Length: 333
Ligand SMILES: C[S@@+](CC[C@H](N)C(=O)[O-])C[C@H]1O[C@@H](n2cnc3c(N)ncnc32)[C@H](O)[C@@H]1O
Image (cartoon, rainbow, N blue to C red; front, side, top):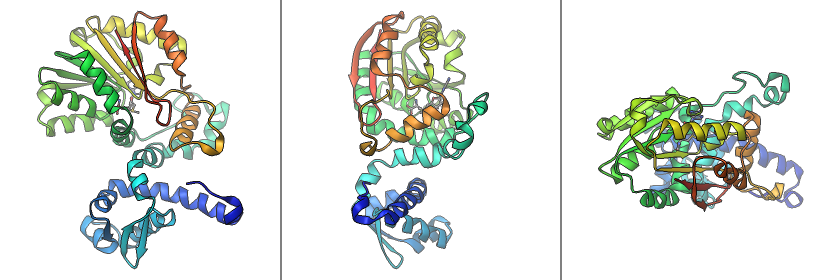
């Protein structure tokens, strides 16, 4: 939301900042309890009836819709809630807001402590891995999916596909559905995400073609099943390979651990530059500040290209998406 300070006055400006912050929590919650989807389908709902039907506290639910109304996502008339001007854009971008208010809330809450260099050792920040995985499925559909599937068509998988940093495993489920001859292996460091992945694979009836391994992609050791992998995918975690020396070592290790892999499809955000502070689009600010707080330096596209040139992987194609955080999909052989 852009705020015209001169028109609204600085007190209004402060209120808008505060209300937007509350609304970010409300958007994340409204998505999870199904209110955004119901409003999308019906255009309106009754807050009290919605609360009763979903076992939610009545006054809190009214307050949630009030927070959405404060930023013009909905309008309220008594307990009737109707979609308003900003609804469609918020619906489309809900995963970005959820990433901030649900997945990364603890990271930003700890900002005063994390800023202090003396505190930046060991596990100095926390995030909610399951909530991040929840948002990432949507972020993927919004940003990466068309480019990913075009790259997969060029890779034409027929055997075992490994997804590094697989989160809740949605990408592998989609791959298995699209390519009936394939099987999948998901690797992730976060047990909570793998629990969701295993549950979803069973619910989809694909558990017999899909396995999950808890492990650190930066320190993978060879395993018999890794030797069969023909296609590697890795989305929204490649920045964790960095800095440069570690990235080079990881690329080299992946080459050794997956000796039969003939294609590596790597999609991630890259560092943006030159956007004026007051014109930053949704997500960029939170994503880049969040990673600075975590001590993870997001590489630029030329930095990625230079490590590929120095590795055993050959860069076939750079697909620039650059929607909000310099999204790109590299195809490597
Ligand atoms: C932003 S999520 C992306 C999830 C998924 N790739 C997707 O496209 O939706 C990043 C994932 O990478 C995982 N991850 C981060 N660092 C990792 C590491 N060193 N080894 C394995 N998984 C890691 C996180 O636990 C998380 O599930």
